[in-house]
Length: 516
Image (cartoon, rainbow, N blue to C red; front, side, top):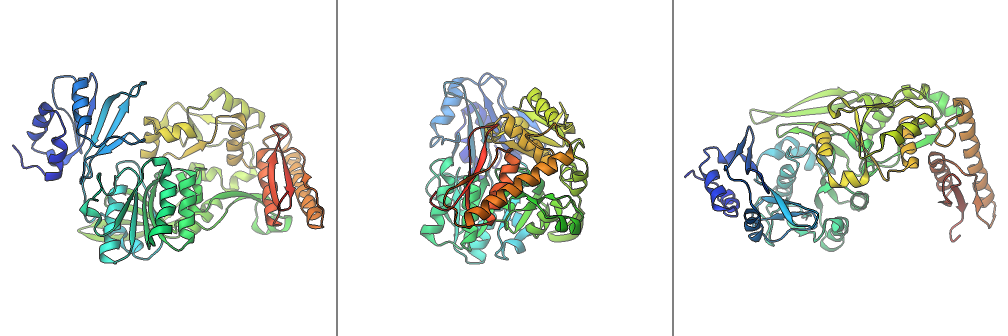
């Protein structure tokens, strides 16, 4: 029998004897990535360079039950672990909730992965790691926690939602060094534990894996505003993914539509309505991981986002390990096709065809009808590999089916609709074509701009009336969601309050003083 790493042996001990024996006989068992066990199918071991059928006998329910009986229990994310190891076992359930499949993923603490970004994490800046699944984000995060806690003697708290960073059980894995770990009882409570970590334990650094919801993004911003360094990962492979993801774009400052005055638009050489960053980024540095030994670094997130929104290329830093040393070079990163679609050049042609889209869980006929009403042409592909954008709904994105994982793995940007409704589809199309009116699609571009100007002037006039000691709220005329958003910004700029009331197509903005 081969010499097997003690932690890997703990995983093999959880398997039925015939699977354990088959794996133990493999000469390259040290390269094992995961074991796939599905009811009624042959068991499979996946290595870095091959897949191997472990046994000629199909998996029975008794095999699955044997494995699950030796685990500590599955959380609401259908993940379980093995005490004091980094292994992860994920369950597949049938409609009745019974486990009919398991993915046993081998976890290893790999040292040296953080060297390529060590100067960034030691700078005190908040760093966001991006990359497709399985690329090594969590491994780099784990070693980052150890380096900051042991080498830099900082107070580090890990918010460990699925026990993937510090392992299962109450005692964390030694690979995190002297960093402390807070476990999360349920994944939907992750944002609350993030805030609790700051309020109760006075950390200098918070380490968080898989920021994926609006609440978690808001918690991250709150932590950063308190002066605590954040090191985290998020769904998405590139900075581009975050820019078009309405759930997570706040991590890089958020994006909003802004209407310029005539003189300012002329000075900038742009149309009057442009896209701009809304606020300072939560993460000052974004690292795109290509593999364990090569990354792209955006050393100034604010500048990278701003230049992207202006349709300009920006300089990124390419880093790679060569003979144990970090090599650097600067490279201009031109925007992808989707970025070009949101550049200033697109603003001169409202009917220009947008990015080639792949729809997942989105009704194609409905999208084409909404685009037609807005006077737009959309390009829809049946092949994800040839697409420039995947469009899906929030519910599908959260479940992470294979197509979405494929898009992330191939760096295809993902646009997430909050709900699968006509108004949400129109808002998405308006984001890609800002001069396309949502409610007035049959009008000409000149008329659209005149309507927009009138709507913004109405909001300014209402704000002035309220500021001139008017006691009662002012309700504006019904508008599209895109225009209402701009009217809300006008109220906010005048330090007034506003909210949208009514239902489409009569939904409108009400502006008022505090307490109304």
